[in-house]
Image (cartoon, rainbow, N blue to C red; front, top):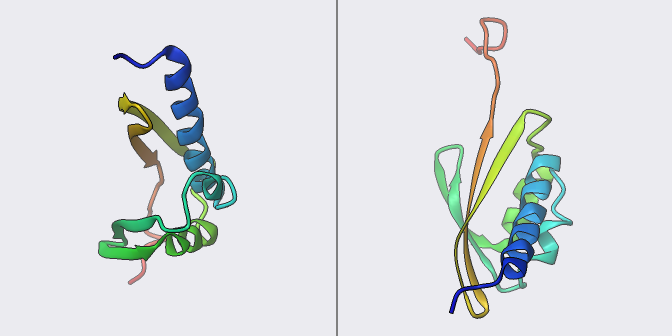
Length: 102
């Protein structure tokens, strides 16, 4: 059975809390989304990170994305109580000779 538009809107609102946490460098929004047993898998600075969701919150709280942060949410599928969501993020920046460490 196909999910209703209301279900898609609810999933999008939840994903936007994740985006807001990352954009603002404030994990309080994301903390409303994940259970305590959730785990982190991903890459940070080219290194694989895995561990508790608390590590993700720590990462979010130590680095804000800033005003140039852009995000797109793709809801891939909703099936009963499960939603598959892809969040694509980008941050534009300029690096010049004054910012490159020699």
